[in-house]
Length: 399
Image 1 (cartoon, rainbow, N blue to C red):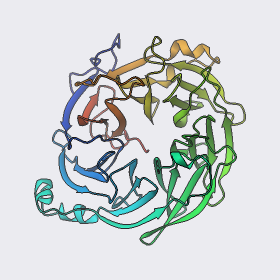
Image 2 (spheres, helix red, strand yellow; image 1 turned 180 degrees about the vertical axis):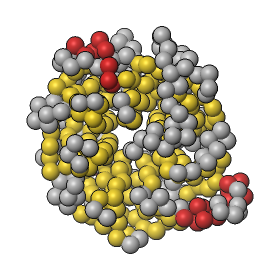
Image 3 (cartoon, helix red, strand yellow; image 1 turned 30 degrees about the horizontal axis):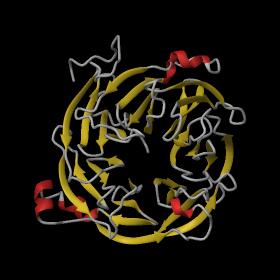
């Protein structure tokens, strides 16, 4: 990375000169989705086959598959490390499964990842929480779509977005079980396909954990979850897209300089990325919008990460874009002129997208100063960005 620049003059359709792919690990032939990284280990959800892979990334230039957890059902919507960094949760249809990854981590003290895989040492299911049906007429859409984990006041929690118009469900780990604490967000429960995604960020000004909820067809919400059993609603921003069908898929927020910014993307409809100034929770201001191709605004983006003042956007067919949010102006809507990518990673093996534009890149996380980019069919790429320092623990995303 020594010769890779931080800034470049132009960012176009191809991979920009400040981006360099360093490695890639392929999985089986099934479609893969969400990823999560902690320490020397990465988890990759097996969207079609079920469960997740456990990958050793101690040497990011040579990621190595160490184990596979196979769920009973062939589905995996999301996977996240729990705060203890030894267990994980995976969303499998109507269940959130708690899994002990400890056998793999312990074996790594004396065995290589390849030896662990050959010995068939695998994560072990501890328990499963099942979503209780009968709360909404929209349960045909129900799945444990997105999970967010956090340790709050010494207890470990799992926030669940189930796509059922019932809001967010909150589980607490008690021993080796997951127990329901509360269900919050109704009547703005997200409608069909919502709530869809979440991000939990520490607000350094409020000194509280804030849950940003992408609330499907009903926009986005922000909640103070410092008292998890009694979440406090801070902000409501309705979905005002000028399109007949459009829903908010992902949302992330945090302080960039003296402003609290919130960014959302859409996945179906007019899929603009939107940047809001939410310094005042009661009056968020839409600063500007962006999409990769104005002639094809239906092409979907997907997941978001915010590290410092840089926003990382996974775009299905076009890869990953990086934005400098410090450059966005403060005048509502006029900030659109300032929202342009400062770096771009294009899929090395682009697929022919379907009519709705779903293909290639599903997720991106930033870990120790590197981008881990998950392609649904190609696997997980390790990508360097010239403005980050590989090995920098602080340069890591949190969702």
